[in-house]
Length: 214
Ligand code: SAH
Image 1 (cartoon, protein in one colour):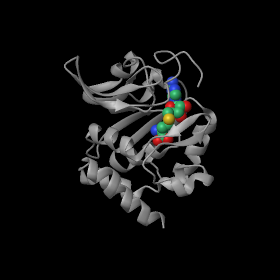
Image 2: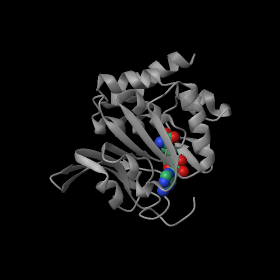
Image 3: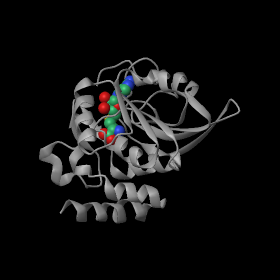
Image 4: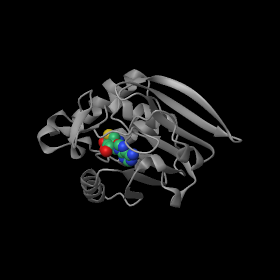
């Protein structure tokens, strides 16, 4: 049942809206999204919308995960930093597409369930840590790609510092209620920014994020 729903999700929500990278589409066909949502929401896992995952947080809409992932243009050799592990779904997608994924989550309860899920699915190239991701994860820098799945007022400077030359960063920028999805590229010290679309994410909390509690 879930396999059929997943195939349909890829056709109706991703391909039809212009997600074309075959590796990205294959990752979405493979990762069992229903394993990343609370059990009572399993039947809605492949719906065209975000879902609550507890602690006031959400798993993003499949299309948003795919859009952000595509913008990183991963080829398979990259080391990727993710801020906001949440359910771990985006983490699993990245693990399918890159060499190593480093992911930071501020809420220990969410991190613990993401860890159990990702281990259960056999992902060995994922490294998780609790903490304030607006500071990045300096120990493993530089990263070829950075993705932030929570909204911040601007690009947190530590993330830019931890991005490799030629690397890409994708993140929602804007106030707590609505933001713009931005792709940034670092070339010879300069940052080129591209606005992709409007979006709505939960806030990035902490220094360089928003100083509020969700
Ligand atoms: N990628 C996730 C989306 C989770 S929602 C998924 O696919 O499920 C965003 C997550 O960012 C939440 O889990 C929230 O707790 C986390 N978050 C918010 N501020 C953070 C911060 N400063 N550092 C790390 N994680 C943060």
